[in-house]
Length: 344
Ligand code: CP3
Image (cartoon, rainbow, N blue to C red; front, top):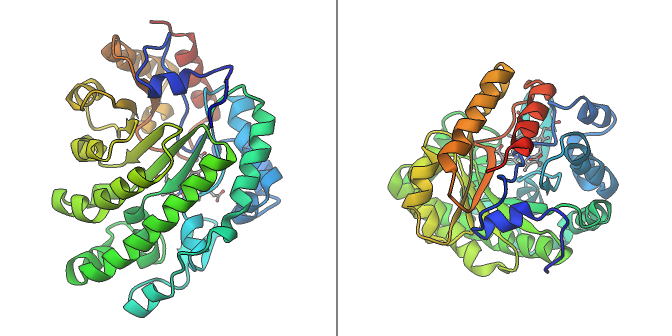
């Protein structure tokens, strides 16, 4: 679906155009660093917020109204696909996501449903409400978790520091891992197409924990499924591919042919951009920890990045990963103002 947008900076940058300034949005821009988020969060559980279209729309709009970013991102979570497939998901304060029925055996894997799109109907419902509120002003980004990252949550039963159980499965029972990854990939294709049909203007695939993998394992257990997803979703809107580890894996990520690669903060963004095949834009890559620093430092680091990217069409400014919950709101707002005042 193509739609005329008042502010189409993100779409133009994703199409490799030189924009008058870089577009800006931030991963986790609607979250706990915002006092207004807590006003809503104190009344509902996180999953209630995701599953009630009016509330999801309210939260999606917070950074639009309070920060002035150039793109909204659907308020949801990457783990909703795993829940729809049969994962018993909860979010506990201070613990993070938890699956009470981890997937570790062939029998567990066989129980995962691929035919579960009806359980996610609250997402297109939310997209429609959000698009009414956005009223053509800004693009709305939809998203899904990448199969490897989702697999890690299903196998570990929650967040993990070292992905020990997941890696044990990849090493000892690769066929089992592949069977689960294939199911997740098939659901992800249906889920992203559902979002595209409902009217999102771009989609991002989050492979947050790819960083844990070796080069060969990344190819076998992550890239293969991301490429399959990108080859099978409707390509009517730009696709952004994000992973922690992109500084290393960018050349492999490019083989999946995303429109944009979102880069973590370890690499020089210009070197990554110039090393990619022509036709791929980049997004990134400020270290989110810079947003704890003094404003003069925040300003300098953003302007240094922009100077480095001068002349490079196809650049979307973002962080190398999400905003942490205790970053001062004022600093996030300041960073966005610095971007918006900049002109090439
Ligand atoms: O970016 C946005 O503002 C859109 C909404 C969004 C959330 N999660 C909201 C959220 C998006 C795009 C995500 C993606 C997500 N979720 C990822 C990939 C991005 C990344 O950061 O790598 C991952 C790995 C998850 C899984 C997840 N969800 C975790 C690990 C947690 C707990 C985090 C913690 O520190 O406790 C969540 C919960 C979550 N997702 C919150 C929000 C606003 C916090 C919920 C709360 O209020 O308690």
